[in-house]
Every structure is written in C-alpha cells, then in structure tokens.
Image (cartoon, rainbow, N blue to C red; front, side, top):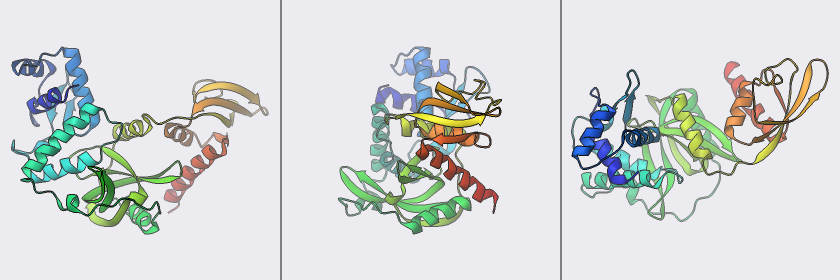
Length: 324
C-alpha cells in the first residue's frame, strides 16, 4: 500500500458516530483521483485496522461493514490537537522493527505534521541528552512497581529507553497501562498500552524502563484480538526452533484420540491402561505455552525441561492469584 493512498483513505473516513461503506469510500477515492477495486480497498482498510494505530473502527453489525475514525482519536477539529501530536511522536518511537515500510512511512508523515502542530518545538523528551549505551541490569524495584500496577489495576507513568534518530534517549510517557510481565529467552518483558488514543499493544524489556510511578487512574485492559496481534508481531520474523514435545496424557483424553493437535505426532507409547506418552514435533512459540497451560489440569509436559518449566511458572502465577 502506498503511503499517500493510505493517508487519503484515513482522511476520507468520517468520525464516529457517522460511518461510510466500502462503495461510498470507493467513489470518494475515485473523485480524489485514486481508482481502487473493491477487493483492494477492503484489504487496505483491514490492514489499517489491524495496525491499531489510527483509531479506525469497523462496524460489523451490517454487511458491507461501515468504517469510521474514533471520535476520541480525531477529535472535533480537523486541526491536530497538542495531545494527539505528542501521541503521534510517542507512537513513532514504539513501532516494531518488522512493521511494513508503508505503515512506518504513514506514521512518520503524521509525526512530521505533529512537529509542525507543536510549532517545531520538540517535547522535553526529545531534548534529553543522548546516551550511547544502557546496562542490562534488572531493577527489582521497577519490577515490583509494574507488578503493583498490574495487581491493583492502575495506570503508571514511566520512562522508556528508545533509539531516536540514531541517538538513544529516555522518553517520558505520562500514562502506560501495564498488563503483563513475561520472560522471553531469559529476558523479562513488560507488556503495555500507551495512553488512551489507540489500542496498540507493545512489549519492552524491563531493563529499558525506569522511573515507574503508579497512578490512581484505572488502567486499560487489552482484548483477545489485541493480545493476538501483539503475539503475531513478536513472533513475525523470529526464528522458531522446532522441538520434540513429550507429554503424558490420559489414554481416553481428546488429545490422545486425535481431536486436539499440538503439532506433528511422531511417536505414541502406552504406559499403562490409563496413561499414554505422546511425542509431537512442534515450534517453540508462546502460543504453544499458552495452549499447554490451558490443558495443564490433565496434561503433563515431560520434555523439553525448559518448556515444562515455563508451563510450571504460569501455573504457579495462577495459583498465587487464587490463593490470595
């Protein structure tokens, strides 16, 4: 998708509660000198919607779907607000490395408009003295503060270490909604959303976060679609190591009967009348851990030990919540 076409589509979408159909938008684009097929326009809209960065809303109550821009995102004026300008500058710094080039260009274009909206005056976090390196040390106090924010359903302010224009800075974020802490290849990662203007989920190493302050404001909760989108972004382009997963299950279980598939079944062994040992060839992904956790009340991971330990960690975390 070209960046100019991308931006034109967003500019032609009405603010809620109004909406526009595919055919209506197609005609408006044609009047603007952009000729698109219905199929291509649908793909463009869906791509923009899945990015979660532009306040795009899809009304699925009727077909064809109605499309609009969230009123909170665009506001009541065509002039970009100061809050939205600052938000675009923050959003630009949190783009995943593997995001499509056209999406990057579109957001960079909005960030340029944002700087113009601020009369070329850069926010304080853009003026900070750059740092060339950061120590990879886990601050237990930061972890405790993030855990506290998650446990008590509170938003937090914090500084996040980012590389900006080839220089590293600590960027100040006035509001983050932390909703998860998760270990990834031995590194503790914090999962969060920024502010209130969009629903994109991000993941950042905890050692790149500092000066966390828990706020009284209630944090936002991501939905399953947003979490799935984050997981896909994390795994995209990441090398997924194939492993042999050995699990012990009841002989009469759904997985032993073939109704649940974790991967390619390469070996099945009957241990006794009640128990079977199954070996699957699978990719080591977070989705696999999540699936094993959901089945943990009747399925036991035997090997690899690292997978077994990751499942045990999730079980203990769940047990701690219910034992309080």
